[in-house]
Image: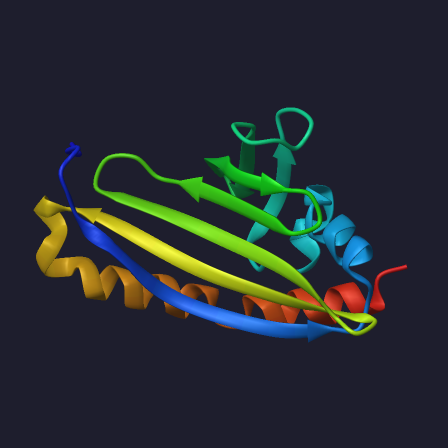
Length: 148
């Protein structure tokens, strides 16, 4: 069982991709959760429980498992932060979009907070998250640039 005391936050990984599309289009594709299985390996379904806004829950299905994420920050066409976890491990995916000429710079930072009980395992947990998410933005870029 988890505890409210945390060992601390640490960045598991960061990534940045230049996507050859305007920011509004990238935002639309990023927040089209029904298309997530096309670029997120293992995800079979993803949907929000309401219109996208801070506090909205997003269910991510991986096979027979469902993990609920919560939109923790939302600035349309600029930032989307989705957090998940309770107890000993809490993960936040922070997507930030910026214009780069006619293109869009999409950045992702994945932060992991662990409880004091898992302090000795914190770096290993972050390394595992980083390995699982390797190529995340590159897959999104490839999908986005070919999307109809």
